[in-house]
Length: 140
Image (cartoon, rainbow, N blue to C red; front, side, top):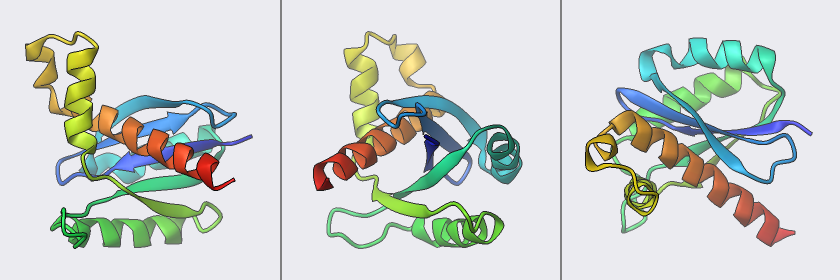
């Protein structure tokens, strides 16, 4: 079975997470400078089989798209053109950053390390992917 890949797209940095090949567990992979994201994806997708790319959908509390959506839509359109054989799906990312911070606190991560925004982005991508996989299982 192929992996799922999750992207928490940001203006400066993008968190990336992947599932195991059986698509049971989400794991943080890395954080990449957004300007180098397509280079990273090209290299990763050559090495690993990915059956779906999940992109965090930025919404506000009133369900309106957040301002980051104007950056994410062109990114997703380009992604779909470059990799037409890999489906790209959105998944609601509300609260993923807050949950990432709480996860670090619960995990005993030191306060200084919790200020590492790259780590927060990677954990957020993991939370997005785990939520996506759980919602898929619930639909079965």
